[in-house]
Image (cartoon, rainbow, N blue to C red; front, side, top):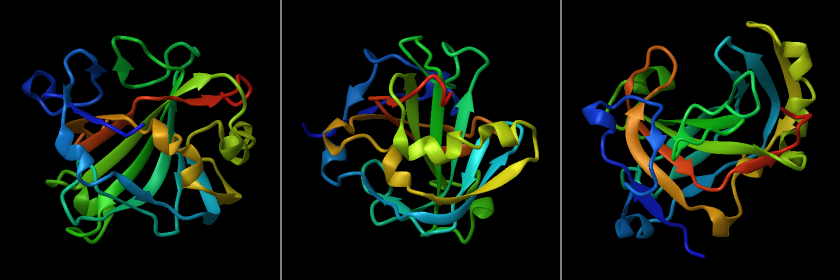
Length: 214
């Protein structure tokens, strides 16, 4: 019932993402239990949902922070946006794979180190600059927390389109506290500029959304 963290060695000696997560190669790190990974997220009002050509983004204006776990002790990472990555087929939409298995979709909660830097632009590419929580998505029952977003996807199918939703709660994306086991590795952004200095935190247990929501 206690969350665990598994550390991955560098991917082929390069800090590039995404990678395949081979669960047998992961190493258990008991030190990650000393300071629990703590997302302190708040509800965002009037959030803009944007198609940037690479993904669908929810731009967040409320100050939500992440700390603890594998992150530098005492550093706060501010949640900047949530990004949806999916493919043309429901079998292969995720960027990362687990034991070479892909998921229909992958969500990224993008954070920047507000203790060391003054903006996300300054933090990109810097040491301990960015932390991304990644959530795999599987097909099943409807996800109520994502309903406001998935209902407007038809309106923002093309790059540059955007729409505002009344509110969004990032906490709705997180697994049950008893199911927050995660993998960790040091990597890069998966879209240009593909900068390194990114701590990836990938939750083991996927979110479930309905076929209609994808």
